[in-house]
Image 1 (cartoon, helix red, strand yellow):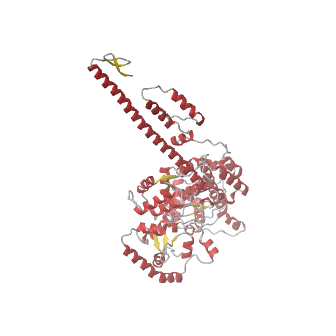
Image 2 (spheres, one colour):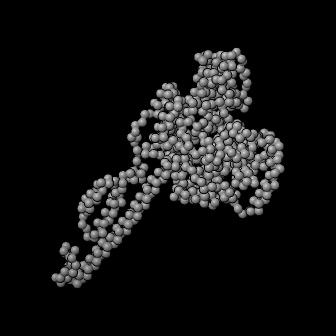
Image 3 (cartoon, one colour):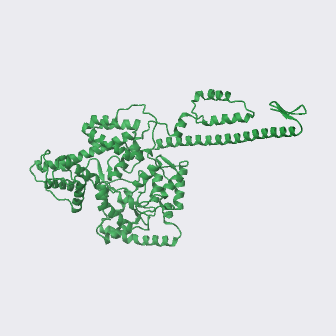
Length: 610
């Protein structure tokens, strides 16, 4: 029998019709077998759709297209710019989108949308979008509408927030949001280029020769690097004051020329559109291609050299400060209170604080602000590629323990080889996460992010509990506390003098322990059981639905097993009856009897009837 989907109201009548059509065969158990098999396939339509993966909910709301709504506020040019990016962005977002919980419309909530768009820009450009990046609070605290900043009216921002809050965003709409933000940032690039033309008194319609193009591009790059808004310089010129022009650092000039050769190879005459294309490419690739290699990787390598033990992802604060005394190429001088406030300090052992390498790399004071209303450029989050791989493989908001262990054991990073055998302590921690969620591990949760930190200590940040850290720049922290972000030379000397004895004692105690694994002691020292979900309501709904489907599957398996047992028993009974008939007939024939369609006769007397 194939799978039959029967509507609830017709289920009883269908079963009766099926039952009446079953032939009355010799053994009553045979009839039960067929009824049981029919019952196994008579499942609810929703469950059947979920099991087959065919339950594609159509949007009953018929909401206005998001691009149309944006066009009314931002104009047709931005709409065209965004529309050209949507398909590519949707493909880049598909893995993250598939792994987020969704509503009945197949859309993600405001919190999940904020998270997904943030992830897209961080992974693609190293951009922290203002209004999307965490400020030390839970992901669910704000809507992605904040990313528009002051570029749209408060009324439109409220309308958009209401739409997302009520209906969510599907994959296409999520891509439209990201494409629109990218288009608005592109408009900033265009405005800066046009301002540079005005400062150098170049008509926008005039092509530039190579020397003029170099002058404009170098000027743009210098101001981008130092966070100077070129447009703000126009009043200086209009007031008759000269604007000083400086060449960008040589490494930055080399990067600019390299990107120029990639975007406009061999060009000798540059139209405004050519200059804009080069500027856009330079700005988009700056984080991943220049800042990461010139700044972030140098800091990361230095911290790994100072690492307390191989692979722990931590540097003792005393070693952190001593390094600054011995090498003046890095400013490892942040105040301990600042490091603690921004979540870069592990104080699980108060006597020996440790700098957490991935958390330190991603603090705001290590970011560069290119005078944009929308974003800052930060070090690349090395955990993004790892999470992207898991999301693409799992494509669900949660996964079974065994699947995650299998994937992570085979997943290498820059500092972790694969395949590998995960430490027993790490496996137990994931078992605890699965147990906390009734057998399923949510991918976008604090506990799983914490587990990923211990699985990849150099790449994945330690996720502090919301409300315990602040995502502040150094200036913001100084204004809030009245302290200096930088610890003075005297302050460093005092700290080293008072902390070195405790640091040495910690090292000797760890050496004496010997048998305890580093990762095991690290897990026990800093692991906390506090859980936070990006979208708790949607996740719990998806979790309940999954459990219901799995419960249905389990019941089907039980009924199928019972039906097979009944079928086997009936078959044995039938065979036994038929064998008995054959044996009796054979014996009767030996005694001179005979067999007819009505039964077996011996000496004219009935021996067995059928």
